[in-house]
Image 1 (tube, one colour):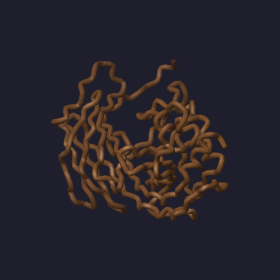
Image 2 (cartoon, rainbow, N blue to C red; image 1 turned 30 degrees about the vertical axis):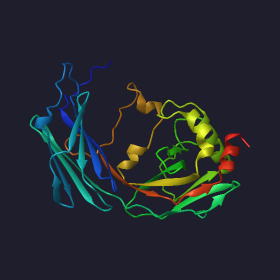
Image 3 (cartoon, helix red, strand yellow; image 1 turned 90 degrees about the horizontal axis):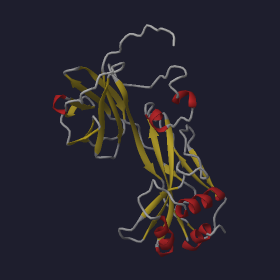
Image 4 (cartoon, rainbow, N blue to C red; image 1 turned 180 degrees about the horizontal axis):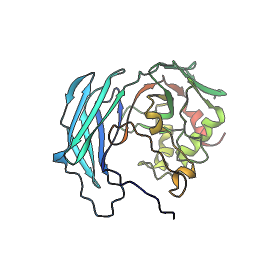
Amino acid sequence: MPDYEIEKSKNMLVVGSVLSSGNPNQILHISKTNLFESLLQQDLDKDSIKVIIKINGYEYMSQPDSIIKYWGRFYYYFRCPLKPFDQVSVKISHPDYESVQAEVEIPDSVFCKNPMEDTLFCELPENFKFYWNKEKSAEAYFVKIFLSASNHDSNDFEIQLNSPYYENLLQSANIQVSCNYTLTNDDFKNCIKNSVQEKNYFRSWNENEINLKLSEYEIVYLYAKIYSLDENAIYCFEQSNSQDELSGFNTKIELYSNVENGRGLVCAYSTAKSKNIYFDKKLIEKCLNGE
């Protein structure tokens, strides 16, 4: 290895948070980085951490509702209801580190619609399309498609169809600037068949029980969730598969950060839900049987 002159990096606080409108609870993740240090590090002292959150210039709260410590990191739960266009400032100080700060604006939620809303399908159309309005405060959008079933009790469930956990399903809905999303006939059938029948260790329920009881549900429907992202949230939702970025032996890795005097990412999004598209249970059973 060449003998490089590397200036010893200062120790910094690291902050991460995904703020959202409509969610009464917000979470802050606080840790530290001590680059080029070989000695064992002491965890942050939570009693020495001071957190100030301002919404539209007003100091809303300086103490968290609860703190969870996990491997030297602290997760702060704040009860801060947010709404679109709120200006949020997060400032964190510690006696051993330089104070850090990040500012974001909550983007507006979209109005999502589809031409088949409030329709009961007994046969599958060629595709399902979801449209939404473009919001000036949103930089881009992220889409999740769900199949849900209900029998008006606690056994309701939902499955994300465009889940990244399956190689043979749709690719994860990527960040997009267009205001529409299309799920084709074949995509829909393959997603249902694989999501319900295949074993998935990322889920907490028993897929076999769902498969057996699906016909007993009174209502089966499809809907979309559209996430309006600010410019910082794009980096949070995107997933890169580039080997160059994952390897420490390639070019220098530049991590995106919007935290002043420290590292980390504080971002924001808003969510909108489309109306439900309803299905006859026999149609779902046909899809499960590959018909």
